[in-house]
Image (tube, rainbow, N blue to C red):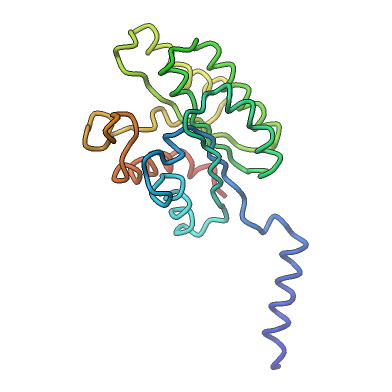
Length: 205
């Protein structure tokens, strides 16, 4: 009888070794400085807070943040295949396009790059959550409308879940942004998590 706890532990270890599905699945956050935590302490960025929220919900996922400040959709597309092979994520959260917009790059090219990332993620067996962005009105109604509509059109065409706007609910609050007026402060990160969680939660087992 004294060996029973040891035997249970041994059997559980053997099951985990033989059944990789029991291990935590990975969620790959694929974004730019808005997800990389620009201007924040590492533990303040929303992907870190997201992993904490997942842990509190006792769901078998870990978050891998592959975001890079300054990243464009072209850069994200070129880097993604290696990341998919390395991490083998169950879910890919694509948060890219803001830098394309700020540089005034063609919306059609951005759309094609995002589509390429969606295709690559699906071919790797991952589910996709697409996160949309918006451009300031000074970019003109034609460009801003086409830019915002790109995310909606891609989500509809690919039947993926969509967060229409990463900074939903606080974009008009200057106190929620750093001095550059672009990057959210630490106090805004939990709000981002709440916004992302609404669309991510249905994808989690």
